[in-house]
Length: 135
Image (cartoon, rainbow, N blue to C red; front, side):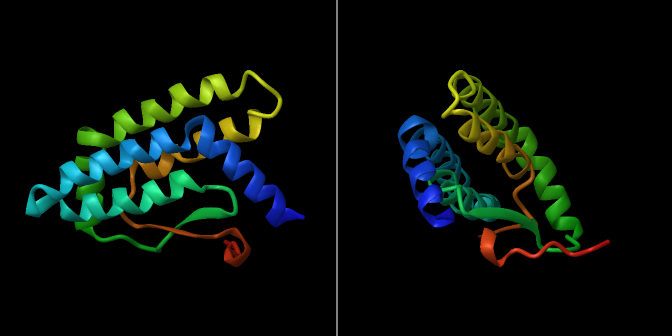
C-alpha cells in the first residue's frame, strides 16, 4: 500500500513540478561541469535532479562529518546556485498547497530546500532503508 501511494504521488509530482525542478538541477549541473573546479557541484546537482524527479519513497540523510572542502563548497554553492534553486522550490510549493491533493507535494517541495542549499555531505537513500540514529 505504501509503495502504491508513493508511485501515485510521484506521478502527480512529476506532472505538476518535478520535471521543471529536475530541469533546473540539470541546468545547474551542466553549468557546474563546464569548469573543472566545480565538477563536484555538477555531480551533486545531477543526483538531486534524480531525487527531484521521484522524491516520494526516498529521503536525504547526512553522510556524517563533512570536511572543510565540503563546507567551503556548500557556501560557494549557496551563493552561486543554491539560493536560486531554493527560491524555485518555494515558488513551486505555493501553488501546490492550494488543493488538498497538492499538500503532500508542497511539503515534499519544501523538504527539498535544505539539500538544494547545501548538497555536499548529503546522501539520498530509500526511505525504507533509513533508520534514524538516536542521539
